[in-house]
Image (tube, rainbow, N blue to C red):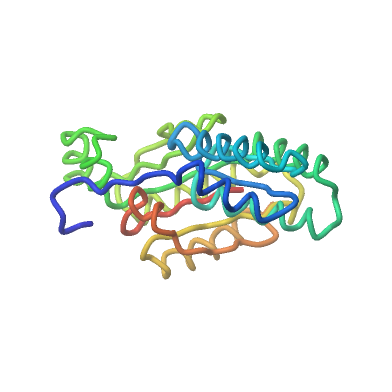
Length: 230
């Protein structure tokens, strides 16, 4: 992607692809990328209707993660715990929906190249950010839309400030009451250090789970990108 002059492109799965997978189980939970960032949620909802046309007895729920990457992983882990705990379908939907409403997602980008190529930020802003060594700390507005939180000069400072922000946001929570998921793009050493910092500075976290970004997330997080959700 770095060597290519044109913008990398992504596409959501077709409704038929979702429906084919849904048809294989009596009950299905689907977790998609934020509906504000992708057509995946709408495609999954159409896929649900297709599956129910053929098998109306199936139980299928599509969750709009209102997040991406680490956020989707965090929701999937929650669903697994509730399924393993023996909760019924409706209880899981209710509790997971409430969790998503409260979940926070933050990310820090080191390379703005793909965002510039895709027109998500202007070339001027990308050039200035690169020249001034600015690292944007981004978040979401509670509805899955990306908003800027702060701009910090230098990657090390941005990572340190990210930990400070999260510590402030979780200071009121009971100790060891939260799980944080941290996804990283080609920067495992940075992720390991961040995990250590989160556990030292944020008493609310009982653990930090690290996961490498998948194909889609690498397009926008890009080299050195970090995404967290809790």
